[in-house]
Image 1: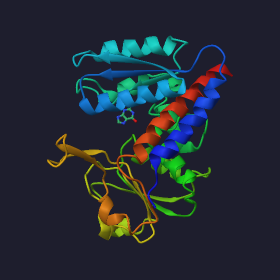
Image 2 (image 1 turned 90 degrees about the vertical axis):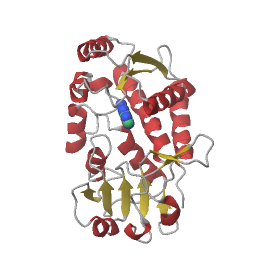
Image 3 (image 1 turned 120 degrees about the horizontal axis):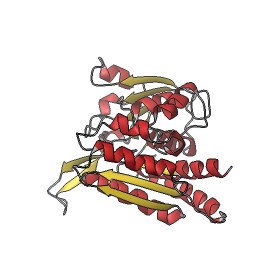
Length: 289
Ligand code: GUN
C-alpha cells in the first residue's frame, strides 16, 4: 500500500487550523531565516510559509545575503529570541560555508527551536523528556506510521543515514518507551559493512542518505514497511523541466514487495511541514500557559 503523506499531512493541518481558529488575540508566529541563495531551500521555505498562512499561523521570512556575517546572524537570532510575538525560529540549512551551523543552532532559544535541533531539545529527546521539540522529519515519520496503523513495538527498524536532522533523532525517537516507539533500532551508514544483510533484517526500513535509488529490490524483505526520506534531483530529458525529483528508494521495483511504502514526492516531505506547524503551535501554547 502506498502511504499518502500529503493526505495525512492535510488532515493534521486541518486539525491544527481548527484549534487556531479558537485563538483570541495574538496568533502563533513563525520566523524563517534564510541566508544565501540555495534554490532548493527557497522552494522548501516558500512551502513552509504557504502552509503557515493556510492554517492561520503568522509567518515572516528574513532573507540575508550570501556574505552576511556569522556575527550579524547571531544578532538577528538574539533579537528574535527576545521578541514576544515570535513563537518559532527556524534557520534554514544549509548555511553559507563561512557560517558555523552548530553555533547558530546553539544561539536559538530552545523554547522557540521549532526545528528541535538545539542540543537541549536533542538531549530531551534522547532521555525521553517529552516537553521539548522533536525534529520535524523524524516526528513526521513517527506520526505517518501511527496514522497508517503500522505497529512499531518490537519491530526491527533499520535507518539508513546518521544525520543530525533525520537519522540520529529518528533512532532516538523509535527506541523510546512512548507510543510509536519500542523498536529495535539499527543505524546503517557509509562505513557500515554488510549493508544488504542489515537491510534484509528490516521490518521497517527508513532511507535517509540522499542517494537516488540506493535501496533496491534485493535489499527489502517481503512485507517490510519502507519510508523514503530522500529528495534527489536527477536529470530527466523527458520532463519539461529537464529534471525529476526521486527518493533514495527504487520505488518501482520495491513497491510490490513491501506492505507499505511512501512515495517521493508526497510521502515524508509534507509531513515535515505539518510537524513544523505542530511544533510552532506547541510553542505558542507553551507560552500562553
Ligand atoms: N534543511 C533541510 N531540512 C531542514 C529542516 O528540517 N530544517 C531546517 N532548518 N533546514 C533544513
